[in-house]
Image (tube, rainbow, N blue to C red):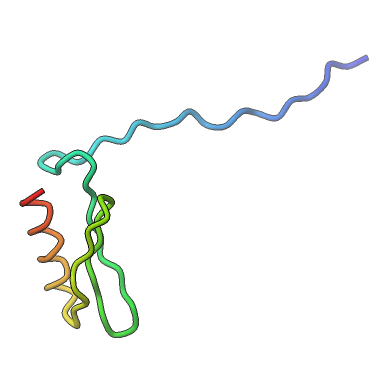
Length: 67
């Protein structure tokens, strides 16, 4: 009798560290909603909706600098 087949386990959990110069626990991105763009962070912070993507990226950078 052949041994039972087992499915491979989940991949090992990767430990993610923030990029150099980025505070731990903070990772800001921009999200588009229709014609607006806003910055969001993993800490729960959210910037105002902007028509300018560049301004939303600036909001995110300012948040990370003050975090």
